[in-house]
Image (cartoon, rainbow, N blue to C red; front, side):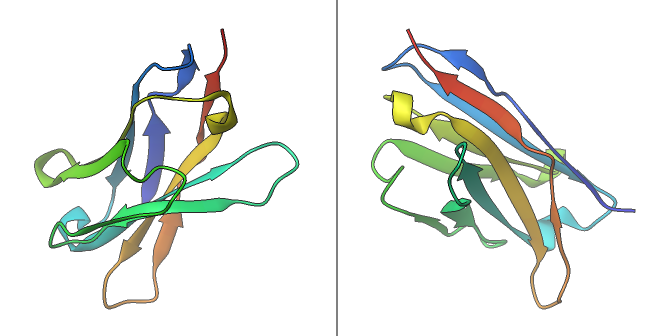
Length: 117
């Protein structure tokens, strides 16, 4: 059974930084692409970016230029590091683990990030 879990969220002041983790078990993580998303209250889920199995990354405008997506296959974990956080970054952040070349993908339960002074 595949399980995905996010961690690293919390309360941070504006201008601060956070590193979120996405850990998967029960699957071949090295073959997976990992996408990061967020959902603020009353808004639709928003795609932020991804890292594919070969390490290439893509970033969407909400986080581009102030974030880094990385992975450590030995730990079955992907990361989203965000800097210069703003109150509008407040949301539940989730990851999607998609096994490349298959129809299978898995979601974590999300981790809350609150940016406030």
